[in-house]
Image 1 (cartoon, rainbow, N blue to C red):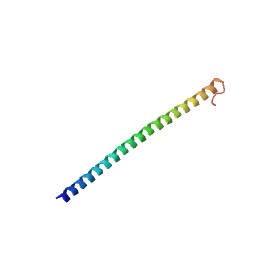
Image 2: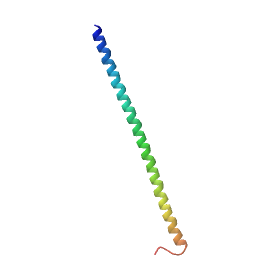
Image 3: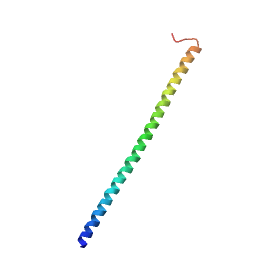
Image 4: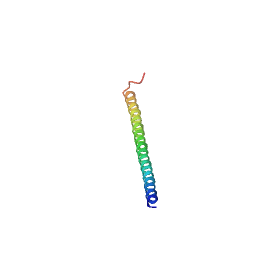
Length: 73
């Protein structure tokens, strides 16, 4: 009788450990996906700012040429 109880306890503990491992895996996956998503947003925002800054500089250079009377011909 004790042998069956011990076997049931072993199986129950094994199932608990498997569930805990699965839960930890899901938590880690969720945490990593959040990090990647945030990094993607940050890099997208940085790229967009650089693009806008580049266009602004190009506009200012063009404006400077026009104001100095050199034109774009």
